[in-house]
Amino acid sequence: MNDKDHAVYQALERVKRFGATHAASFPTGSIATTEFARGSQIITEIGPVDFQPGTPASPATGARNHLFAEVWEDLKAISDTARTIAKKEPGFAADFALGEDTKREILATATEFLKHLESPATVAKFVAYLLPADFVTDLENDLAAIDGKAAERTDDRIEDVGETARIATLIKEARDLIGSLNTSVRNLFRRDPEILAEWRAASRIHRTGGGGPDQTPPPAPPIS
Image (cartoon, rainbow, N blue to C red; front, side, top):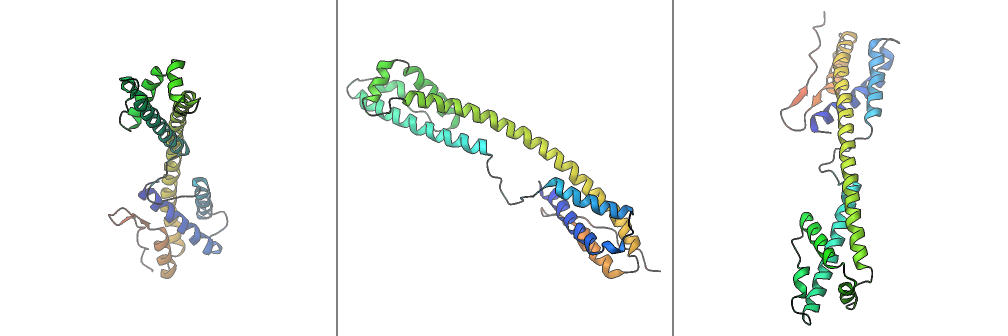
């Protein structure tokens, strides 16, 4: 939720409290009573709002990053071992040179290493230096898991797009509802400047990103 939408949400919460405080003043079955009730429903439908700066990574993204870290550590162990083997077999380490530690390079390096580890005899040379007997399988499984998390992350993005659209629709409804309530409240309390001032404070939509209030209800009509 961006700052503009969050400002509308906060105003709607204040409007809800105003409606509860002055509920007895609104005739049962009036448009205003219905709109106050709908405002409460909108808050419930939007659900809890976390507007703290920064958004934590999705579970799929966090798990994928962890897998990349594991693969990178495995690749470093394989490369280091290959250099040791090369002391007795010159040139052996050439097939196990590390790339950079970017995600793209990690995937490319892991794929290249696996090509050179298809021979059981080659694998045995690494195991002789106490790499786990299943280190190749472990690397393959991690790569497969990374692909799986990438698919989950795509699903997360699709779900986020749908959720954003749903909330945007509710926020627009909330903004329109506050505007409609403004007419009813101003008419009902037209001779009560204190309550009108309370309403203006409750229904004003403050922009947190600069530019001042996004919307301020019009002033109450003169008291005749």
